[in-house]
Image 1 (cartoon, rainbow, N blue to C red):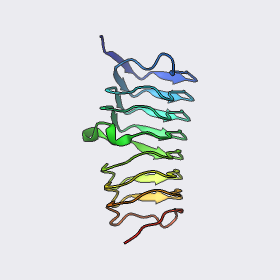
Image 2 (image 1 turned 45 degrees about the horizontal axis):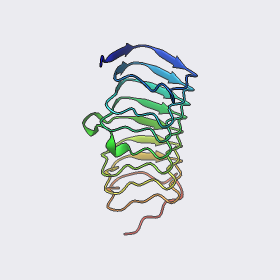
Image 3 (image 1 turned 135 degrees about the horizontal axis):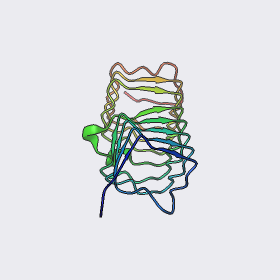
Length: 163
């Protein structure tokens, strides 16, 4: 199957639930108000992309590359983010809903999260040392074996951390 290369494209109000996204590279693309809920993004490369107010609930991300990719106001309910390619995993999240997501063993050192919601999310074994979480909601989130050294959670709420 041919690999699609999409550079500087804009995708607005598109529903990809039936068609999915073609395998390949998306470089500097902008997805706005798109529905990708349940879509298999496995193996797709997103480089310098921007997702704004998109629904990515339950997407499958096995081997997906998210390099310098921004998510603003997106819904990522139940995504197993540990399945994404971890060597180039540098997404940024702002005002996103990431309830029931799994960040199991992910390295998020020194990242900044603003007004994100992580209800019932799993951060077990993750390294979020030095990260800043501004006004985030961690209600019911799990932090088993999570590296929280120098993480700033002082404006966030809902978390319980046992020592």
